[in-house]
Length: 339
Ligand SMILES: *Cc1c(COP(=O)(O)O)cnc(C)c1O
Image (tube, rainbow, N blue to C red; front, top):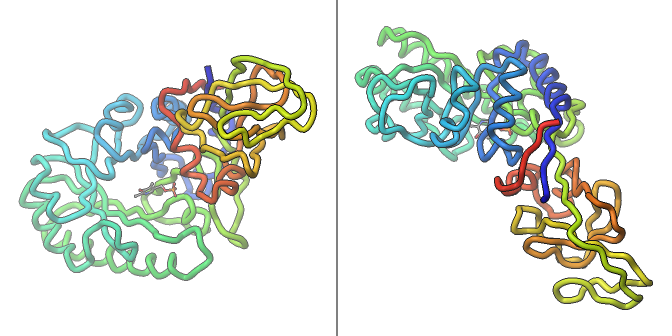
């Protein structure tokens, strides 16, 4: 069976670097949405707890429930509860969410400072806070998200300025309404590494905890280490004469007599389907031959196991996509093993 190895020491290495950058591991939200970017949500929650992380962020209530025992606090980015839930906070992405959230729930107000994806507008803050107070919701945080912290443009600074205005406005309204001041957070992985003077209450890191920085040159380049490697096991080995055409469409033809093995992973398991025209290589440099099938692929040689990748940036480049997509697609059915 194919499997995923999760490297504990690499994970702790990354958490150490990030914690240093934001001045304390108690400030870090580990972002574990979408099965922890494909790494395995329960495995990553367990390791995060072992490291001493106190809070995580996920997309749904279902995800939050699966890791409830590992964190005192979990922020849910986009899902609304039927009943009040202890230890779980809910992002208010739109004013209309406020009426749907059960009384006494913990909430965090998401503000749109320029990404225009979700979040309430700056001019809606006063209304939102009044509604939150009237409903006896507990306002734990106010946060925003950067649209291009990974790019060498001024947009990060522009949104940061907008968030300063947000802080002022929230403080003003909270004083008027006599509600306790919430904590503020805005930084994702890329923003964390652009800010030498981090001074917010929390930061939310996804891609960097998994070992990748996504900053465009010449932004700083932290020495993070990829946490995940994907492995497949050999199903069978055959010897072919020169000229055998392998797999769908027969796009790969053996240039000489060749030993070829079939391995138990394919695009149905979340590995990208390669068309075989431009070959991709395994972690130790062997070509994957021809087209990738739904649950198998062929590789020259007869190794018992192959590591398909231990650094997703190579595949992201090959498939013209982002690292996030390479790891997030990996099927939750693949076994995750911590080593
Ligand atoms: C996914 C997400 C993050 C994490 O972003 P990275 O770039 O992976 O660090 C942080 N905040 C919000 C709101 C998100 O949706």
